[in-house]
Length: 86
Length: 146
Image (cartoon, rainbow over all chains, first blue to last red):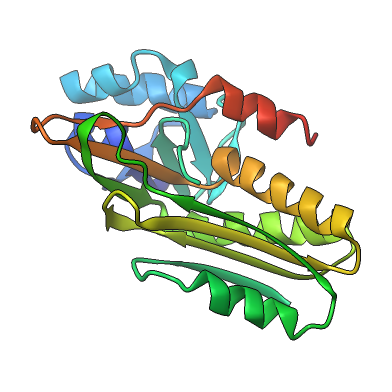
């Protein structure tokens, strides 16, 4: 079990209904993609937010990382749509 | 000099360029982005990931300073609710050679659009609101600096 803070931004936050939570991840969740699949089992909001993983972006400990990156000892994992600043 | 600022307050482009001018480089390039009032847009709200925004913008500024011979970089990005005509973003660079200043400025705004965690939500006069979608053109513009 690894305890992580999960952050959701923009449309992902709106669909899930809140922007932050803490969860204990099972040992079977190794990558960001695994985590999205696991979270999708927690209800309609999650399932809808993560229905097309490749349309989302992920930051592990404040650095954008590919979805297949290992989570290892990550403390904070954030999910959001592609960014639109500037 | 590296100046990175994220906040709700407006900024003064003239004062920011003057602050770079005192470095004595001789050349300053800048880009200022404003909210457009297209299609009945009444306001735009910028959300960000506070813990990551500063890290991402500082990394961009440092990358620009390592690629080009710059004396100064200023990156300012506003968040919160903005209206048409309001300033959103300022990128400014100071260098002894115009090509360095201009290229680094273009690099910074192109990369800021794909690498910094900001999201825009647009609200319209008829009451509907939508998140702005990332544009494939922005990805191409960013990738050309790889």
